[in-house]
View 1 (cartoon, one colour):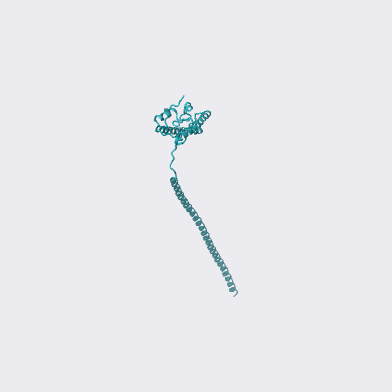
View 2 (cartoon, rainbow, N blue to C red; view 1 turned 135 degrees about the horizontal axis):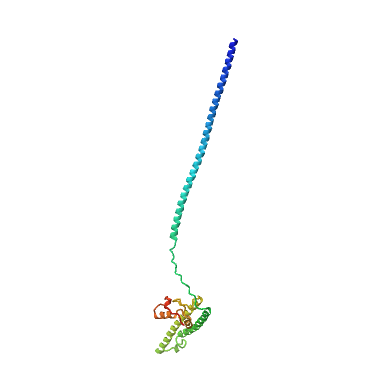
Length: 249
């Protein structure tokens, strides 16, 4: 009996040991499986997150690039349109090209300051005497004959009436010529102020001093004045300077 009991005890201990071993093995396997599962899950999650991040970054980059391209294209189009519009408006508003006028050389006054002063005094003296003459001629012309308007002293004979009318017409004609001379004197004084005195208006050549001494109001040279008197040219029309002789001395 004792032997049987010992045998059973030993067999029980053996079975316990085997059970422990099997339990350990199964536990290890279960732990390994669980660890693998958790690792796989964690790996999947990290991979998904990383994939999502990379996808998001790539999407952002592509969106940014596409946006930049579209913005650039739109900007180019708007700039081109604006440039075309401005060019069209400028072309419409732009005035016609102005033709450049030929430059005319300014002719300097050939006279010195003392000479100009001398001719100015001559012109002023002539102007003063001319105004006195004109007032006397006007008074005589518009008196209405002798007697100062007294009807009893007025001529009744046709010959006397005719002579009075002739005198009056002559006085009026003389007055008109004196007015024309006065205008020429005023023009000469203006030319002295503008420093263009002594230059022929027709040719631009200097007028001789002897001519200015004789007629200080002259605005034409001798030859030019002759051509005007002969009807070859009109007063003020230009002629080539080579055709005129202005040496009065």
